[in-house]
Image (cartoon, rainbow, N blue to C red):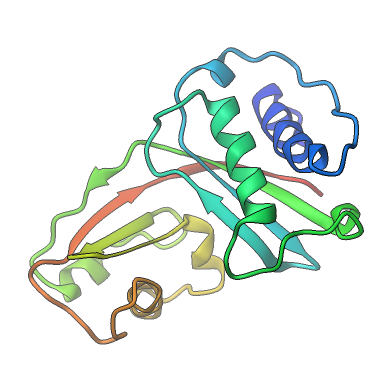
Length: 182
């Protein structure tokens, strides 16, 4: 568990939101001022280092505590890629909370320009093109450290071809502060 109060509060809040589904008693959350301020977060669940759910918000539209709790619940029970989390899985599930910085436009004239300007390990990236949209948190760089592969997989996630590029593509980037259960 992290030693800073915000990280601890976010991780406990996320786990409490999941545990409540099974009728388990909540753990006490230390009051931290940031919890009531608007915040955008992603909650990632893993088991044995493998993804088990990930849901989040890109814009700060509700109090951070609410955002984390609702994203944790959705990651556990509504991520279409996985069956709903069972109570038996909960003890072996690790929670990670990412607090997003505000997104900033990342205008580029070409994919090559985007690839040279991306900051591996730092940038989270949002890709939009027409009705297609996808994001990768900065943590995805751990498994896709090469910018070209990172971008190709992001396009695939958005439902586009890996080699697709169009002048209508819009990119935005963001950073995160993250905390993870051990």
